[in-house]
Length: 196
Image (cartoon, rainbow, N blue to C red; front, top):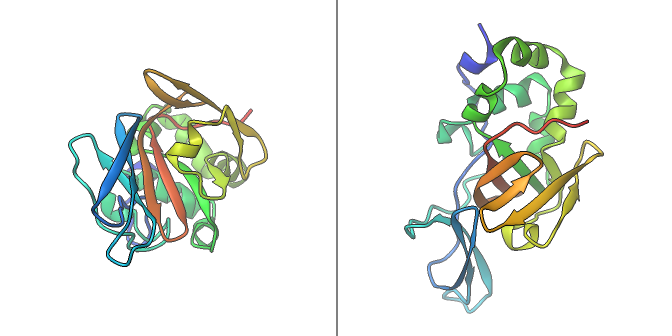
């Protein structure tokens, strides 16, 4: 049985859509999604909201760390299986903060099955691929769009290209942004990134 079809039974996950507060005062588009800055909440503190879809639908507050909150998303099973196979669960449950460019199951499905199975069986290569998706620190969309590259935990840098069509990280399109968790932020991508 391939990891793509494996049933994930742990309480691990990569994605939780999240926001804080409700009073948005500014919005800037990024990858088809709005990034909102919150002026104040009931206590008068400055806070940032997370990501909301173009229709203004906002999501609940962070329910846990990067790993804890993603299984419920239902579209990151291959990623979670890969994280488990590479023994990176504890790392991604750590304090961080981390910025994760997270490929969906559909992104992993672009890889031929034999190649994906080989990758999942090669722990050293798998670890390199997964850590190439992680940038140290919490880099929100408003900061990502100011960059032309970012150094990953793996050691190499990803290329960031901002255009009217959206944002690309290497060859992957960013399809959702600013998914805030207790130990970082996630930006969802549609292609698995491969280091050189």
